[in-house]
Image (cartoon, rainbow, N blue to C red; front, side, top):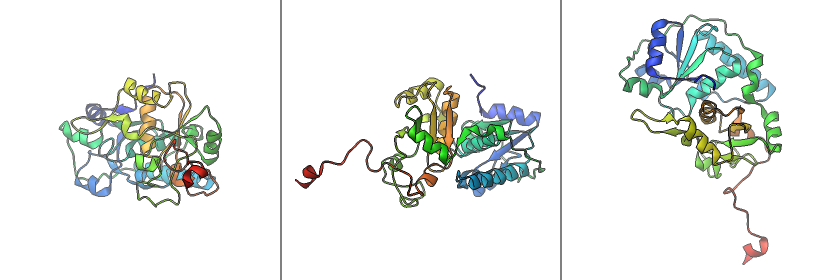
Length: 295
């Protein structure tokens, strides 16, 4: 099994004492200003950035985050430790940061499991002092880009019944009552990518005294089994813009699912192209025949 990407507050505290760590705080600026882990750099763009997977969109995303992470002091030798408020309060944004760094090929990265709420619950110190990182040259590794699928790859996955297309969005989006977490009509169409199966991203977590934490390996595998996923199943995840699906991606990788990739453009991209097929209405319910409907 691969080494876990999740670390505890005590593990992070020891890493900070040893040096060579850049904590990345993905929360909104106001939350960061109210108190954060010492040395943390605030990069809320990890959550807010809306990506497209067109060739131009991919280049723009790579350039944007290579510059942003370099300015935060990541040059390849430092370990990035990404955190949000809790594992569910940031819609998976710490995991989104991890997937972005992985996609760009950054060699050293971890996620603070439980986020800032667990850090403070364990009595670890916080500061309001704003970090002043020394900018580094961030090098992109093109060979690492296999974690994401682009629009063309997603079209191919839709046509491939061996690949599970896993929708991780909230239930109102899955049933087509809303187009996004930003409002029901934020996108022009409501529905699902054809053939998708559904595990709401919250199901990968369970409560703790300090907030939601990812479930244990066997618990995650049990959730996956409900939609026909085992360790050997190829899976492509999507949500609205890749944050909630990133949370599920980390969970599945922690559980040992071997072939997990992320459609980063997600529903925000797919739904805006009227030429792309979607499934509408309540899942599994077919419209009655016309004769029956007229009775």
